[in-house]
Length: 492
Ligand SMILES: Cc1cc2nc3c(=O)[nH]c(=O)nc-3n(C[C@H](O)[C@H](O)[C@H](O)COP(=O)(O)OP(=O)(O)OC[C@H]3O[C@@H](n4cnc5c(N)ncnc54)[C@H](O)[C@@H]3O)c2cc1C
Image 1 (tube, helix red, strand yellow):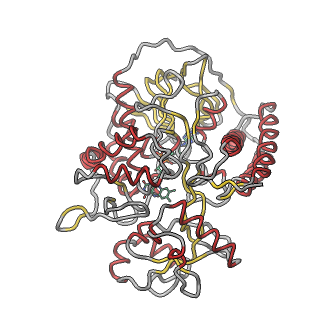
Image 2 (spheres, protein in one colour; image 1 turned 135 degrees about the vertical axis):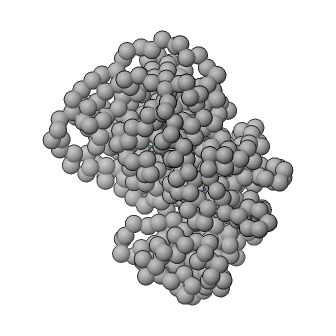
Image 3 (cartoon, protein in one colour; image 1 turned 90 degrees about the horizontal axis):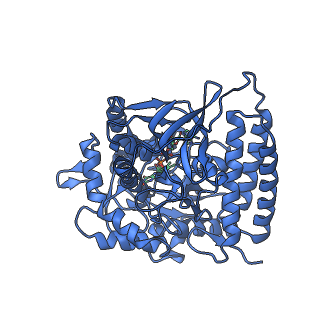
């Protein structure tokens, strides 16, 4: 199989890249599950954009929340492109919530102003449903669902495409341009807001080929995921709920964020998560609570219909009850290092979206900057590809292999559970140097055992990817000595 461009991932970053590629080029878009199974589809709060020319304030907020470890030049580019980004999405059929005065903007932690556009509390779904329609009518784009990319075809310093598994067949898909848009890493944690099939595959494959990565120690924990005491799956309670006035409290009503930060509930995510974590330990409680009871019920129900109905399913009435919440893994600031054009350290290999490290987020991501990044840098990758040389010689280095039909995956599923438990325990909000060494040593042992086996299957690669991503986090966490942003290192 051959395509001019292969894009791994059908979230917002992958789809925007595909739509912005010159229609004369043949594009194959791979998604591991169905196209709706992305984190982008789950995005609730919104997309940040500077529509009023107050660029400096958005740049400053991004830098402050990122603890100044961001790349200011790239942040400036992102913010300057934000108005165009909204125009682009609207030209593709996206409709953001409006009032009679214009966009209905909201605020989230770390933003000095209301600058977040949204579609109720399901912004990702609203954006993607519009984009799917456009995608299905682009004849140069072939969507391959239920197709896992399991390796990159890298020879020397050039990428020549990917290895995929489709219908139990391991096969090469050659391409002059390969784009990593595989999203987040939440599948390697026991508790995460992410889709559970996301193991940081793009980052893991890049790691195995020594493609440059950056800042993998910076993992963001969202302060307010629904806490289900019965062990049921948690779901996100958007930061926009606090943006609209909800308080964080203990069961007795104490508003503890007053003791932590002048911005109270709207401090950066790292600060709020760490404050909750400390309070949970101090009070020996598994959660704290979000309180919206003082807010206008009709307004909150209209503004957050999804959150309200998910809470009701769990027996919580947001107008009368406190909502139990606790921090869970949410986002990774690190990833495959790219330049302003989305190029990686390997020729013909690009990255965008959450799996990329553009330098925008520094040590902690500002809320609602991620969807913006997906569109701005998906667009950048597409324009780099459109301008580049499409005649590079492709090396035939892939392999074809029929995989066994009756594969016993239980061995890898068990190992994956063990790996998730290790990462969740040792690479959580606060990390201890001894624990990190233990985790690193265990994961590298498993990694070597996996490489020695040739028992290929999707379960094998999921496990290998989870281990690889875990290794990158441990290694970077061991390397960084000081606590900053989302990364807290305990002292011996
Ligand atoms: C619950 C939730 C709410 C959020 N709310 C917001 C918000 O309001 N605003 C905001 O800015 N950000 C938000 N975020 C973060 C934001 O949604 C994500 O960072 C962003 O959407 C990532 O987009 P992406 O295109 O990089 O990856 P994703 O949307 O995660 O897509 C990844 C794609 O890659 C595919 N894939 C992965 N591995 C492989 C493989 N090996 N082979 C083939 N395909 C593969 C997946 O199947 C999927 O199609 C939220 C995240 C979550 C989880």
